[in-house]
Length: 343
Ligand code: HEM
Image 1 (cartoon, rainbow, N blue to C red):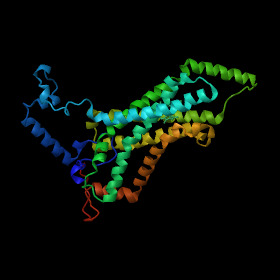
Image 2 (image 1 turned 45 degrees about the vertical axis):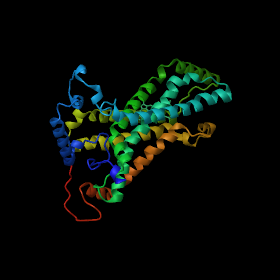
Image 3 (image 1 turned 180 degrees about the vertical axis):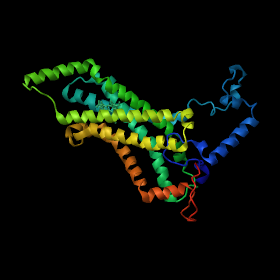
């Protein structure tokens, strides 16, 4: 229903973690209206929220609307989704990697829960959240292409999702950073040292002098390298999404960091996962209790997003979407000279 749809004209580009509404002239005007309204009502307690300082005792809690005082309202949806995904991946990995060996081979693998199981949950949720930060941009672009205009409002759910991209991205970065710390801690664990000694003993028993497996070495070197580069780029994105930093950049610089670098980071994370998986895709032992391994589950959505993005940057689509974002409408086809509203 059109009436229920929130305005979406302030979103020029559908790709960014943190859409900077003030950068568009329309939105700047809207912001000015808001500021005027605020300055006319300065005496109202609602304005305490915007003030740097106010006295708790001057503050009439009943007159402040609950909505205004909500705790982290923008983070609720992304946090709920992150929590649900974490729970799902935790149970899934626990069943496959802890319960399955316990029930079928009486092997006690419960020690895996604090580090190894958690370090599957963290990257799986991280890459899914990062994908959720870029998916609405792709959907919005497809919708604009389909409608042939930027002047029709996005559906309400898409608008809300677009406005939460920054939170999805930052949560993804946070979990990705945790995953990196967990991964780098592997060699310092006692369980790892015992395993290493056991492998060395088995090697001696089998009278094997060298246990070097060339393709496995390359696999690990490459996926760890890709993970580190991806994390570094995500770090730049996170810093650029701080309002003070973002506001000091030009629109082109900001767009380059949040959109171009963002998709590059998602691409690197996906390749990192694919290289980690290597030839496990065709290994039937991975399908414990007929369930696919987690890396297979999580890599599909980013692959779809990256594929759509690649198709959308093909000249036949990108030219049309650029025209639409300049104000051109397919029905009218005026051929007016294109001037970007956000420049
Ligand atoms: C310094 C950076 C990174 C390092 C050293 C690193 C290292 C690793 C390691 C060691 C694994 C294997 C985990 C295991 O099987 O126990 C792994 C898997 C994985 N990593 Fe990373 N990683 C890094 C960054 C990232 C980032 C930024 C992402 C995405 C947000 C990511 C996503 C994944 C995924 C999805 C898996 C597959 C997990 C599964 O089996 O379900 N990694 N990484």
